[in-house]
Length: 194
Figure 1 (cartoon, rainbow, N blue to C red):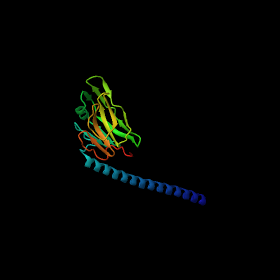
Figure 2: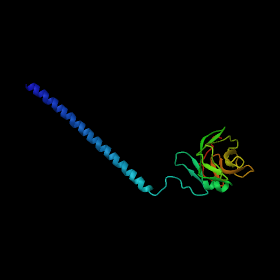
Figure 3: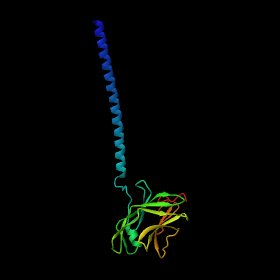
Figure 4: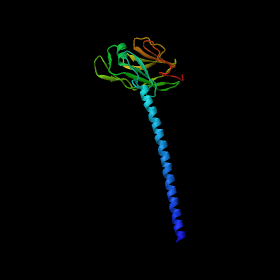
């Protein structure tokens, strides 16, 4: 009997030892996890405190063109006030957002949010969701076509008006310039690769 009791006691001791080690492991892990979570919370609280009152989206003012990189893609916003100021007999009801989908030597594809507008108070129209240019001058001009009542793209290095169109935004290599000659910076739109 003594041998059986010894084996039983030894088995019980081993089981208890394993339980204690598991409990200690989980306790240490829980403490580590709690410490990590508290550090993370402190960092988040610090960031929230430092950024309180700051806008995360761009401030869009009237009659302006705005560069916006908050959505992870280079985007230029032509405000409806800016468009309505320069395009007669047309009313844009929302801002026009433009970004580069792809660019290369053969073509540049600009994406848009399909902004809505009306011509002389008539039915609503929409800007095409993709504007395509085949650049040969290293520059693209986003313009308003007076005869077709459309926003379009032409190869150009100038914002001057012609009989058929009104220049709105010039993208020349890495430089983007609005109608008023304001340089939006080298990071706004790019037709690099030309």
